[in-house]
Length: 325
Image 1 (cartoon, rainbow, N blue to C red):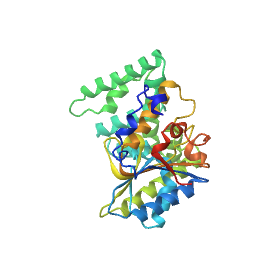
Image 2: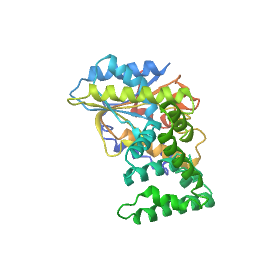
Image 3: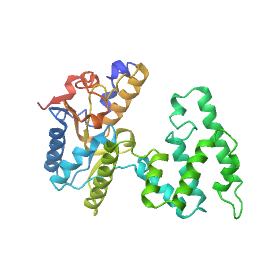
Image 4: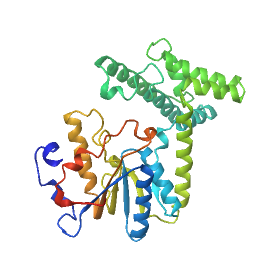
């Protein structure tokens, strides 16, 4: 991994704090199914005990679901990151907040920016910043500049909504205004079922039952986790990218499989970046590191078909690894 993907610098692994202790190895474990992996994590944490800090690092928040269930079965307290702002429910929350108080300009600006970033209007989404053409990037930048300009022009007794309506003849904003005014009108004139139907349609909320079910379950699980972790918690579940600057006595890295880490169809530069992420993730451990991979994972979690243990594992010098099975 280090030699192949990190500019040929072979000594990076020696920077891991416990690597100099010959009695400690990177513990590598393969599982037939993700549920067996989750049970192993919960059982091992139970054996380690609450006196030590533990980090469970996952490729994305979806991977945490079976792990959280296994931890709850053993009554192990945990905290888990949950980005409510990434959910459709959050967009609905912003809309309802603005409809309740149309003078809340900050809430309204957040609402329209969320609509734009999710690609619901004709204004290019946040994704365009990375993969868009020069034309789409320019269109997005023009729209955001216009919104910023309107923000600075808000005076006493005026709202961002009334200022935005002045752009009704600008084709860039036509669809956005159609969405906003349509929702406002529906909220005023229609009963609850019709308004909810309009909201689902115009904001493209939960395009299928699966996404709706998944989001509601995730929110409820997060609430249960927060309840369980009140009073202190030594187990944290985070995505690899959001563990920046954090360390723990014991670290479990989940989902170290080809097509996930490195990601499917990653080019040479992307593999380098994934390799660096994996290396930095390993450096979070102080006393013990577990690298885990599974033969079977729910496709609703991975979004892709996995292809065996990651090539990054095979690039780690064998002297550092203890295979548990």
